Image (cartoon, rainbow over all chains, first blue to last red):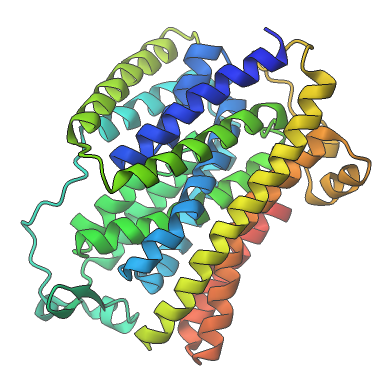
Length: 279
Length: 121
């Protein structure tokens, strides 16, 4: 295939991935690596490099919209970012020593989790300021967000657990070239008891920083191929932009189920191809 | 204190969007030159060869941009994209120093050190 045709096809696929990822809130990054490796036969390492750059693009592009809402907790984000950045460095370092077949299987399992995990708010947790954690208070992680009737205070708990989960999220990001958004939200919302909206917006901020750490390592290793990054990043960016414009109007729940089904199929494909050493 | 945090954040959010836009435009420029020069050559992404040294480090990329190498211009777009979240952390260090919040100035500085190590280490 010549470079023009290849770029056009990859651009189209990435456009769709970015569009669906932003519409459904599941993120486009998880689809890029399967798209490139399974459909276009691209080497896993090049695919991860290109995916990382597009993950930064969607995170930074969405930041302004998220920030305007006033939910993200920059202190929580920065504190946990120590764990994710260190994890990302370790993961990116490990990526050279693990076979691409093994990476494909791990990728498939993460995809499976993304497809099955919920992005909806489950109102089971009470974010009671009285249940505050000593460490959370000491680190001044507790905050407040704009509620319907004035600002609502919240407290952070189980800081060490959340911190450890973030290190894993960072390692997966460095290993697989994804944003690990689902795991980050899980760590903040479920483990640390942060309000859901605070978790998702803070996660968006963190995704960009984590991916930047991984991307730095991949760039210096020669895994970021400009000819491949170019159609992927421009496509994802265009798609995400279009998706965010549409988001206010669209009822995305049926679309989300469709996207989940796609993720499931890709997960099985990745695991199968990794297991049989085709990747 | 939260109010100053939000005001700073809002400006940073806008800055990030500009960063993404500039990076995208740089990459588009590189893409146009790249496709014009090499559009009809065959792709070689099936096997991993690794990218040549002149497109791997920030210093080398900037040098090759001056020679108008298409792939270097695309890589400059990549560097700008990587720089947007890094810049956000740089601003956080500054903002916390202004607030005399030494704990969080320190925490942001650790994150910044990890990011610098990733890029230049």
